[in-house]
Each structure stands twice: as C-alpha cells, then as structure tokens.
Length: 439
Image (cartoon, rainbow, N blue to C red; front, side, top):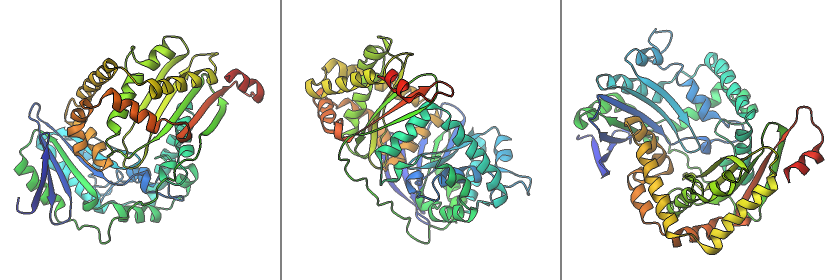
C-alpha cells in the first residue's frame, strides 16, 4: 500500500492512485460468486479523433486483440487462447468518450487478465499485416450500420446537430478514414493516449483488496506514465442559432421520426431531471409517448434517451412509424407533447412513477460484477465515477418543478435537430410522391 494513495470511497467502491505512473484503480469486493471482472477504461474515444483518422479508437480496439509483446500468434500464446482457456469472457467496446477492455473470469485466474492488459497497454504490436484484414472487418461493420435505417438516421442526427465538436462523427468513423488511415497514424494515436495516467483499472468481484493492489502494482507498476501531457480536447460546440432538419430517403420498410435537443455535460446536475423526463415520456405503458403513439397505432416502437457524456449531449426521441403513418403527423404530436410539458409542467405522481421505474432499471442493470463494472465505465468516461454511486440518490431529489424547468431550458426549438427516415420502394425515383406520403 505504500505505493498507492487512497483517494476516496463511495458506495462501497474505493479509489486508489498508483504513485509510480498515475494509474487509477477502483475496487469493489463482492463475494457472492467466485468470479471477478477486470476492466481497463481509457479516456479516449471518438471525441479525441479528427478528420483523417476518425474511427481510430475503434480500429485500434480490433488491433489490440491481435497481439502484444508477450501474447501473440508467433509465440503460440495469443490473448484469446490464454484467456479463453481459463474460462474467461473477454471483449472491448468503444464510444464517444472512452474505450474499455475487460475480462470476466474465475477469481483464481485474475492475474492472467492483469498480465494481458498490462502488456497491451504499452506493448501492442499494431502490425500492418493485421491492420489490412481488420480494416475489412470494420468496413463490413460500417456497411451493416449504413444498411440499418435507424443507425443511418442516428449517425446523421449527431452529424447535423454538431458542427465543430467531434461528436459530429460517429465512433466507427467515416468510411474513407477507415480505409485510408495508415498503421503509423494509428500507432501515433496509441502512443498519445494509451498510458497508465490516462486509464482506470476496475476490479469487481470475489477478491481481497490488499492482494489485488499488490498484483496490480506487480503488473502495471513498471509501466511509465506518458512522456507528454495527455492532449486536452478543447473544441466546444457554438450555440445553435435555429432548428436544423434533414431527410434520408432510401429503400426501407418503415419511416422513422427523430427529434433531438442539446443537453449539458454529464457532470451537470440538470441531467437528473432530464433522466426523469426521459422515463416520464417513454418508460412503461402509462408514459406519455406510449399512450400517444403506441396505443393509437401510429408507431410500433419508441426510443427516448438522455445520455450523460463528458461534453454536451443530446436528448433524443425516435418514433418508428406504422405503415401509412405520416412523418409530419407524428413529429407534430411529439412537439405538442413537449410543449405541453414546458407550458403546464408534469404531475407529482408522474415523477414518482418515473423515479420508481428508474430504480428498478438500475437494479436490473447492476446485477453481477460485469454489469457493475460496465456502468462504472460510463461514469468514468463522463469524468466522475461517483456519478454511479450517487445516481439514485440524486434522482430521488428531482421534483416536478425541476422537470418543467429543464424542459423549458433545453427542449427549445432553436436548439433542436429533426431527422426523418423516409422509405423508398425499390428503384423508386418519385420523390414528390414519397414526400406527400410522409405528411
């Protein structure tokens, strides 16, 4: 323990800082099953990319499974072979503000996960011979997303809502960047961001803290901190000066209406009433949008989300239309509902029901060591891991007055972005007929 500073504790989770290199460590002992989740979260995502290497974080995610100094196909001891042979489930995910690599495995094999993650933190091989086939895999993933109407609409929503901020481009990147980025450019990106002082190790499960801290120091302690400060992403999005709209017209079966509004950074307290508003509008059969659009037969499904990100996010509403339902009709109903909330507010019982549903959702989402680590991962990404431990308490403090206030503040027309997916029949070029049907 002499090589650690204990920073703080919250909700049973303890934070330590490894003095030798600035690595953050979060520990939560949970002894209900003899398993452990080991996760490394890097504070790098598509937010840290720029034109020419969009998608770099995601492509690196693929390459970092292809081998590191001590675990590679030439030695016969690959990352996948080593960990799967001891019964581990392993993978990685990339998003706007972070990348995470994780293993869920029997507790007696925890040190194997540490050895792998420490090795590829600084010694990933990143070979051009691996990049070429992995680029094809990622491009195929990109094309599958392009063929999905909702994913295509979602990508355009962010690209239209954000002009300066790198949330403009999706995590998978633009196709030409996926195809054209060099291995050397990816290595430069890796050598900029993948360091202990830009990472958090999370360990949750059946272990003893003192022993695990000793093992982490053994495997990560000799790694150096970054030779240069981790670059700050300083671009901010200018205030929007009017509503933005776009339409995607292509082959498809059902229309979609999307409406989004700018929201504050994830650390801002207004995200708690926005979360309640999210549930109030869309969670359960008694929610406002469900009764308005699903019960009436105008939509087959709804998605409403307020994601707290490191920088300004979006409050997003999607309605998936039934056949022959007009886009304009559904959009107007969505806007009228939001205006009613802004003008008249909401009922106390609606807030209480939304809070109760949120508590249940959180309880289900935190079942097991991996689920807890995954949720913590998102709180680390937004800049404060205690967001995870204090979330429910802060949510229960929200009042109906708070919900109306944030609706008035953020759900305003001049800060909105609206997108329609309008399906075309195969080989259809009758644009006027399509737009008339959308009304």
